Image (cartoon, rainbow, N blue to C red):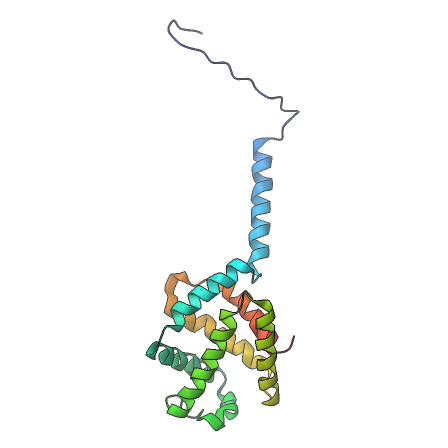
Length: 184
């Protein structure tokens, strides 16, 4: 019923035959968004590479922070892979706090830093990874150690970053680096 003084606005409605039901359209959009997110979770794309570069810069720090990061990484690595110390006998691997091993740790982390810094320059990254692959191959370092090193990074880096750590991006981009060093 119409009351005096009320303005009535008529809306033109579209025919249900001409447009999909709203609920179905929302479901289709939700599925598409989910598929895109799932596909991007395993990708080391431009956004992931940029994020890794920023997060690594924060975790890697400067000066003595780098030394502490190295100690954390190697302590965790050798806890998981005690037999790997044999590969580090020439660089004081029996004492991760020694100057000799700290120098080696600095070189390794500088290599990680170099790889991460050129993640967005594929031609340069390939050359660096090819060089590192040759170094690791001649020392007989097998693939499982690279997996362990990646697991250690996934443990130590979040401890440095807190909630800012993007595990999906790190896993995807570390896989690029690992596969390159392994010659895959």
